[in-house]
Image 1 (cartoon, helix red, strand yellow):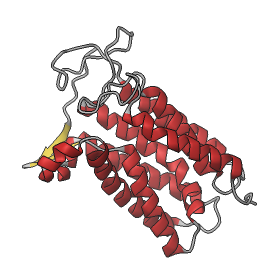
Image 2 (cartoon, helix red, strand yellow):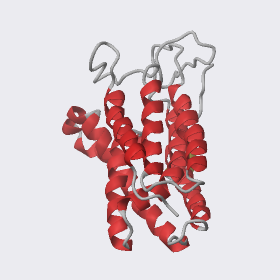
Image 3 (cartoon, helix red, strand yellow):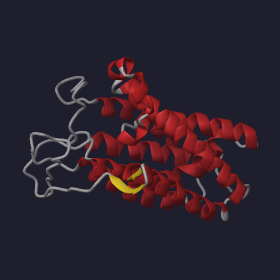
Image 4 (cartoon, helix red, strand yellow):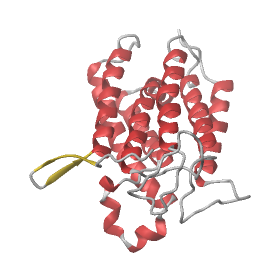
Length: 259
């Protein structure tokens, strides 16, 4: 199979609107709708708070995701081409960097609204998989972050970005399913019942970290990084391990049980 989707969704005069950006927009709009719905069953939350929260998250995702990609994955390149740091439409967003950016944003949001940090993260965690799933679809359309060579029945040739024309795992679609659909179902179910403070956030960290760690086995490592240890450990796995550990700690320790 050889997907061939134009990364430009449509043009308005000289302005090109890319699918990559539209996927993020759809993710944010979907997250807003789910947040408004979730607010109806969470005392202390309303539509205005959700709107403010999504603004903070959007800023955190964009700044953190881009800076994380620059620092964790291609720092030497961007050191020589600093202007390209701002070319976000070309792709290149780090989930782990985006997560750090969002955590800072949520901390600031909590201070402004007099909510605890974990109350905010517990509320927002079930909304995140929607954005993650659509973001991975954006990676697929951009034909970036593809997987290793394989003869698996689902293998695809990403001719636009892979000059070798090698059949590969469509690892970005695997992640769209696991980090998007599956993670959403788990968190929406888990958060539907009263949980200890921090438990929903912990479940998110454990599940995402585990899914990402596993998919890295079939995902081609970044060419400028390669494997970091033992010919199989990738940067994505190294960044995922602390997430899993911290998430387990939050699940086991937790805070006061919700009423």
